[in-house]
Length: 124
Length: 108
Image (cartoon, rainbow over all chains, first blue to last red; front, side):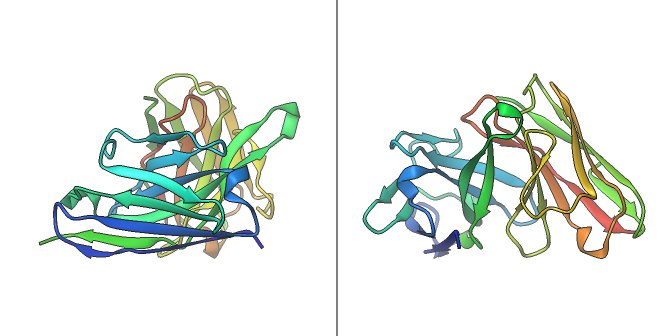
């Protein structure tokens, strides 16, 4: 079964750092794009970052320069290193696999496997 | 960045009713539009991709339509487990990926 399990969330002071982990099983992270998506309390979904199968990385403007996405291919784990944390980074952080379908002869992207989420609270 | 606007923000409906949710893009996303369902306390769940293709295991009462800038998610007969928040998301011009603000479907 394809699965993602996040860990590493917790309470951190403003300006602090935290590293989230996303352990994948049932599929190799090196063969897929994987994203981080967050959800502030009572709010909607916000895309954070993506790492492509070939290793390219991209970030939302709100986290660029502060967050770093990476992966350990041997352990099949994704990471999100979060530095200079701010109050508005408080959220549940989900990792999600970007899948690819081929109905109607065209490739379509979607997020088909999601973790259960890990909660990050930034507060003094 | 492509902005997705969902309407209405909240929809109060009775079980068995037909429900239509709207998602409008600030510029064309072709058919690169995805719908997710999120129940309270749970991660989002993929419903529809490519604007109209149901994901594996999604019941046929869920259907998606539209292309360009205007999209619709229809639930033909609302079941109790369908009360949730629904998000649209575009994969047309990314990164960045963008989500709509969500539509909450609540019990009337």
